[in-house]
Length: 181
Length: 181
View 1 (tube, rainbow over the protein chains, first blue to last red):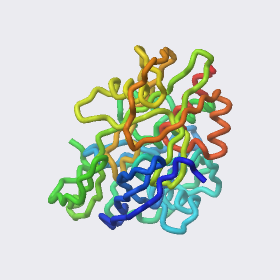
View 2 (view 1 turned 120 degrees about the vertical axis):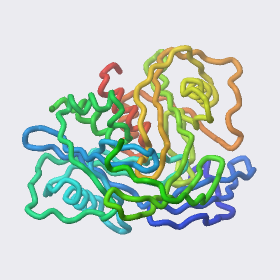
View 3 (view 1 turned 180 degrees about the horizontal axis):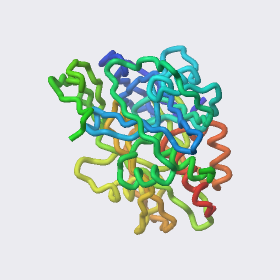
């Protein structure tokens, strides 16, 4: 039982989209007063750090409409309802990079932005990559380009703001802390 | 000029809240086809890693309505429009911990969830903390409790899922990588 729990008095559904649902809750605060909470519901996301045999990290370059710019990110995608995160990880790896893997290790999982969204993100790593002869097609509205970088190059991308999202910054810091590259 | 740029054909405003704005854009894809993008607009956020004189990290325990649970996080808050991130950092530090500082170093900045939101997060660190005699009052609908942890204790919190958000997991990994605690 959370002593700071905020009890829901009323939920107003605002938007039901393909990626997000938005709602506003009237809540009762611990001091008895009421307030409003704006909430974004999201099914969660899964990312993979793919390490090649020659010790490079495979990133994808992708246009991000919310920012109106292109970022360099580790491969990632939306968790489908009821799907195991490892399944999402392999699918997104295959679709975005053309590689598959039979071996994934969980690096971390955390909420992207717990103040307003419930998106939970899983990050996996693999250095067991196998090239697919015929990679599956990805989402038809998704255009990505592959970039293979050494860890030092990736750190340079962070410096230059080309790598600038939570999961990818975390991945670069993780590999740096690991000291294996 | 981004070659994967998605040109906006139409913007539909969905919701204009206190924390987020939601809109759906019809976009033209690089292949000429059209698609929809669901976008959450957010003014950005600032977090601080406060290190005490006896080498502990000050965290705040806070109920997060989107998750319906309490998380342990580094102090953070919303960037007000036009505000310098350092100003937000000091204000949130003062309101949430009762300490202030004249010295902040930028650790990282990244987008929390670039697939659907434009929230940019800044993380600062300071080990120059001064206790305030009369800390300013925080948001009246925000209830937090302080927790001071060593780095080893914080890592344990990560293991147990008590620390489970992007900025705080990043902060713990950063301090681990720094090797100074």
